[in-house]
Amino acid sequence: MSSRSKKGSVLLYVIMIFCLMTILGLGLITLTNHNTKMTKIEMDSEQVYQSALSGLETTLVSFEKDPETGAKITEFIRSGGGTTSTELNIDKMGKINIAITCASGEEVSSCKKLKVDSTATLNGLSRTVTGYLNVIEGGLEFPVTVKQGDDDIDDRYRKVQQPGDKEYCLFGTSPTQVGTECFKEKASTYEDKFSQYEKEPNLEKYNKKLDEFQLMAKGQKCNFEATIDSSCVVEGSGNTVTGKNVVIDNSKSDVVIDFKNIVGVMSSNFTLTDPDSEYLVIFISNKPIVFFDTSFGNDIKDADNFVIIGSKNTNFLFQGMDKNVNGYGWIISPFQDEDPWGALDTKKGQVSLRGQNNKTANLYGGAYASIVSQVNAANIYGVKPSDKMLGLFADLDLEMSGGGAMTFAKTYDK
Image (cartoon, rainbow, N blue to C red; front, top):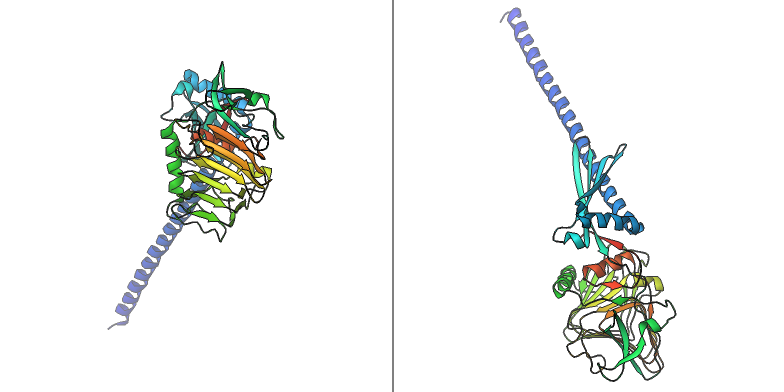
């Protein structure tokens, strides 16, 4: 082969290699540019989501902190104003649009739940995050509070319709003999005013919320030998829980403990890892349950976290028998028995506190019940509930009055 043809073939190879390298180089440049763009899009997407979330949180908190302005916005929406909105333009965070409307399914003229849509836009990307606000009419200035009764006397209070108002009053020996002593005439250590409960809640709405709590706990068995950090069910039918010291981690989320078919909790204590947390510890029960020599919480601020909720068939007895017991929180049993007068601790819709053998039973928080009764050294000391607790009351359709302006409690549930 001549030297000229060899040179020609080498040149051809060089050209082919050069073209291949050029193609690979262009491909790498294109891929790099694509990856850079995707990374930028992902960063912008995360930024726009965080901006929307920040706008939502800021709005929800502002309603809780400034209920007077929130009330004006609510009345505007109720009057047929439709949607109220505002837009923020924050450097490096993009535009944030806040739109507030009445939540779907609500009657606009008496809207009790507001829907808040926070939409952020940045570099052509848009994200919307939604939250909700319970509108609590009249707020709650003071919870039900009952002072100590005389030894060996059952002080029993029941919701009645007095001329012009509803309130709890002391009864005599039958449900028709209403005593003259009502809550407005009583006093207590912590608060000297009282809120009145307006009505029984809507059973369907109440049960729907209980179903949500049951689903949170379903499938997880409570292990009281370790710290409880998630919702769970206490197994057993007709059984009791005895001698447990249970620590509940409420630092990350609400924790539901479903006592289900448990009939009693004896000589046990329930404490929190984070009393300053906004998250609740929710005990639920579908049958009457007795708390003997059992305390929940350690301090008055724990009343913002603990709540015991019963179904239509429940009543609760909280008793100190061999030791003094304290409950920090709320006990809810709002459905009145068809026959509202009967043996102590047997009637549906009743919360009973009892001291025995010179021991005391104290509830620091409140009781939302058709009947509240005390025997011996038993007390309910009213503590104003937190916004989170008020939000739970609204979700359960529990209405209260007794002072205060319109207030708001945030929720992420529809």
